[in-house]
Length: 205
Image (cartoon, rainbow, N blue to C red; front, side, top):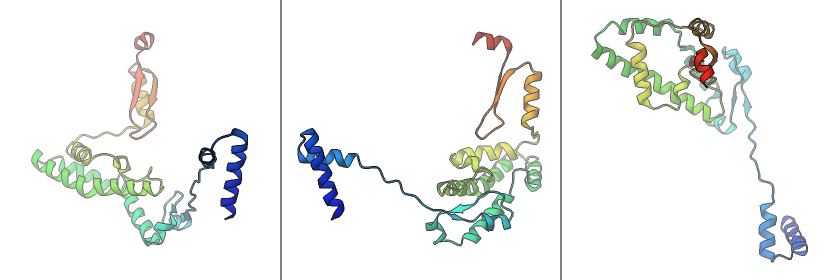
């Protein structure tokens, strides 16, 4: 009742200042009310994660923590993080699969996309929706990509015999050696995308 009386008082005060009708003054007063921003206090699980070897801050929404086993979820997340892109098992799989005829490589790559790429990517999308950082999670780059993209990328990776990996410094050195300047790298995944300009192209811009 106190809030209602306060509202009426402010509406009448505005009426007195502006000469507006009661309903118009009420709409104006209501529009001036500050918007309410919900604040959710996350549950800190960094110490639990650190004990499992997770080297980043870990927080969980209370509504989620009440519904699942938080420790079990972190343990499964840790197991997923162990599956890194530099996993020797993946490299061995690629070397083996790439030596088979194309039809076999295609089938295996589609199975990999469905059994590994898709689950990890969608799991990363779910975690991102829960305000969990997924920047270091394997295959998180695919979280908003279609399954078709995952299939084609899996085929590209596991059907190719030759694979070279380069650091940012090595890529920059190669571009510089090719006579390119103003080299810049992408700030979002995939980070290895870069662009450079020849001297005459720079002058023409």
